[in-house]
Length: 192
Image (cartoon, rainbow, N blue to C red; front, top):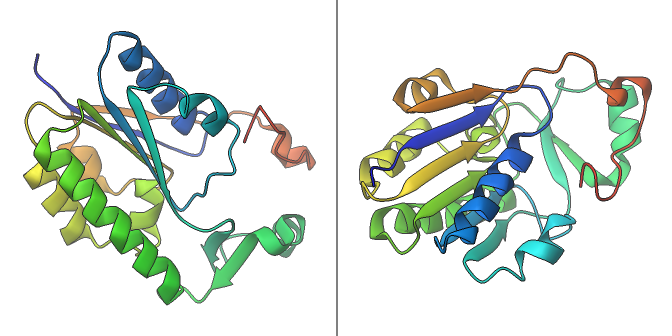
């Protein structure tokens, strides 16, 4: 069966959720799935279930905090995040984070090239590209190395145009209304 490159992006909710749904569906028919989560650690509720599904391998490359360039969020939003976010000067992400993401990039490159997995989901890869943690050249190298039998799924806001142009399927999640805008915090089991 031919495999494809998929991108789930946009400002709406559901990119990771859609990719996890695809992983569960694929596992249901015995496909081997790698869910490689960039800029995340194993603090999300879905890990409790996904770690029990043998055909799905979950790996994370991140810290238990998020990073964000200066000026991207309001002071009020940053106050709500508290210690869970590290703000960095635009174009100068923390080196320790860049080093972690580089390890993830190498793992992703190996996974898409070898065919050890039927599906490789690169969760929040788009954001790593957007923040400059992964260079465009590295992303293009990953696509060029892809085994034609491996389905690759990229998730995260801010997918670059070149990736959208290369993908076979692009879904843009649009936020029409969100309770975050009324100050509702992320809820355990719903958003994380």
